[in-house]
Amino acid sequence: MDHPRTRTSHPSRAAGSGGRPPAHGASASGASAARSATVPSDGPPVDTATVYRTRAHRGGHPAHPGTLLSRIVHPSARLTGFGTGVVITSITLAGGAIDSWLFNGPGVFFGLVFVAASIAGALWVRRYDLAAAPVSAPIAFALALVFTGDSGSGGIVGHLMGTVTGLATHTVWLYAGTILAAVVAVVRKFAGRPPPR
Image (cartoon, rainbow, N blue to C red; front, side, top):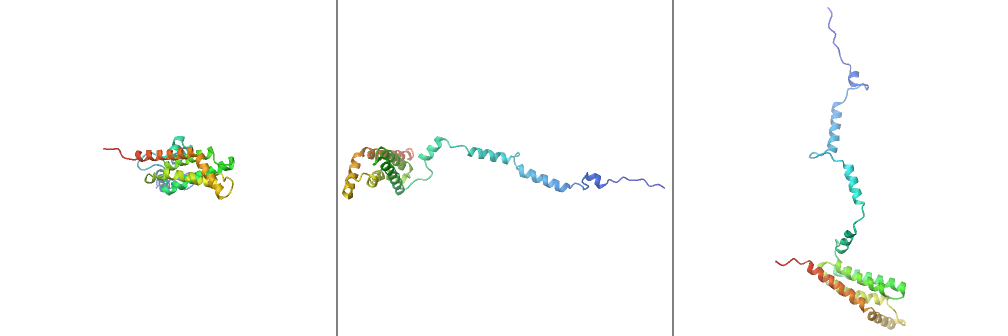
């Protein structure tokens, strides 16, 4: 009595050319891991590389001149009263030294640097120490003339006379820097007050 023949599928044919059956669990877990890495749970797929390139490209643009001016006028950190005096004095001394080195004495360049330093000090000082800017400006001006002014005929007396002469001849710059620093301080003081009810 003949028995019916049953066809059996060979593992090599089912697996393909590799001779091994496909690892369904491994492929499924790998696919799910890839989907979870690229597809957020609550939204559409996000190409992280594209987002990164876009952010890097935006960060490479130079800042707008208006933004730079706003950062200069409104810095993130403010100076104390003592720090304002140090900044105004340092900038004024540097301007006087450069002017003396180039033109043998403080002149127009020194005056412009002093005015700019006075305004910067009034802009950068914190609101609690606004009075420090107009007070520090004449002190910085006098110290800069003492160290960089004309020494006259030499000696202590000559240097003192040269400082007095410099104060007399550069009075316009002294008043200009001090008054502008006071104006900026007053504007900042009243601009920071809340409006009346």
